[in-house]
Image (cartoon, rainbow, N blue to C red; front, side, top):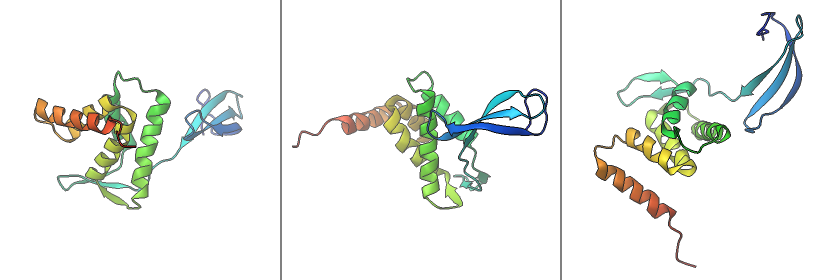
Length: 157
């Protein structure tokens, strides 16, 4: 890895530990030329995953695209950076469990909605309204009523 200061091509790892989110490795590195120290993070990456779009197109999986869509849904919600990283990790883990190289975009939507529903109901409704293409307020109302019904504690003992 190049040094970010002098661009020397060789650095050494001084220390490695699990990052605070528990889903990545933080590495302290030192440049062998100028001795500058910096941190890098290593995380799981889904490789060779092809998404089958609704219109028949195929495109490579993009974590950045997933993150961008979720950030819009989670905007101004009380979701920590660690919670957000865990959300992404849970969605990707669900996709990996499918054990397929090609998956329909609908599967991604299902994984996102399942995990977002657990994290934040408002972010879930925001995402669902775009994903399900809500046409009017009644569709919002139906989905909110489902959420409320799911949250009510059971009276059975």
